Image (cartoon, rainbow, N blue to C red; front, side, top):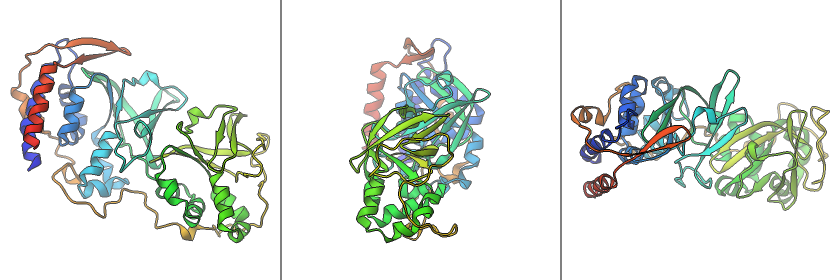
Amino acid sequence: MRTSILAPIVACLTFASLSLAQDGTKDLTQLLQSNKNLSEFTTLLTSYGDIYANLSFQSGVTILAPNNDAFNKIPYSSLGPAFEANQSQIVRSVLQYHILPGLHPSTSYNGTFSFDNTWLQNSSYTNVTGGQVIGGVQQAGDVNVFISGLGSRSTLVTPNLQFTGGIVHVIDTFLIPPQNLIQTVPQFNLTAAGGAVENTSLADYANSHSDLTFFVPQNAAFQALGGTLQSMPLSQIQRILNYHIVNSSSIGYSSNLLNGTVLRTRAGQNLTITFASNSLFVNQARILQQDLLLSNGVMHVIDNFLDPDAPSVTANPEIATAPPLLQGTSLSENVVPFTSFLPTSVTSFDTSSATPTSSFGVSDIGKGTSAFATASASATSTSKSTKKKSAGVKTNAPPIAMIALLTALTLMIWN
């Protein structure tokens, strides 16, 4: 029913959007229609009329638009079950995760990761202040790459397509909204840490508290101390784990981990960041893998345990791996402690309670048509808009009367 009543709304939005491009810059409708490799994205976007309406009236926004090839990859990705079940709220969150407030032209990225907030703010899918982030970096050969949840990478294939409200970057793979700690650690073979968090009743805090930074020891670090850790009281293990968690309003993405940075942990003691010999360290531990995004923050993989009783220990970049500060007996290489406490790994969105809807799903891939494609054929351009420039990208502001009219019409029909 709601899908059918969206048709007149989308037609009106089409008419409004066509009236905005008076200086040769395409509006969003025209831009999408003129790029055939975005036909699937157009279908997806316009099936969520409220998001499309909001985008049509933006003045300064960046859209990371997956191309048609990216849609063909969905069934083989962690997004596949949600799209297959037509779970509309999850698909909505995925779409919101591809929209960034502000203008982010390709030239704004360099060799250092930057982390930009997105429109994904639904507390069911993220607990990051200001909206869930994506990471962007420019790699060798001026190739721009975006990172998202579960270590997913998307490459920018067509940059800086301008429309009256901002810019569109075409990417080759969907961005995946980050998952919580327990859902993410199996993806990176950090099963011991995940099991230890579960076993010490820290999972609820680790998964739900906002703006957390985790320094997660690799499985080998747990194996080196496994015999001792397994005989420790749970309260002592919990204290050690809390020394690996930072709760701060400023999430510890690598761009914030400057040499000499001091971080206060949940255990109450400090951690110190060192940058030396082109490597990043936290206390004595070397950071092996940076910026694995989580639904409520970020985690970094480290080579060794941090000791809350030795907060002043410093890094030694001359050795590959520092000896463990915590002393204990090791386990054999094929024994990973605490793993049995980890729930069945979940590396895709939970669709167990999904209710199929008429929104975009896997069955729609390949249709390549949109609700406004037919309506816009007969629409005419009649209004002028005010021009302004920001970061070298032209943007226009729509007439306020038109916004008010369409908003009222949307509310009337929706209710």
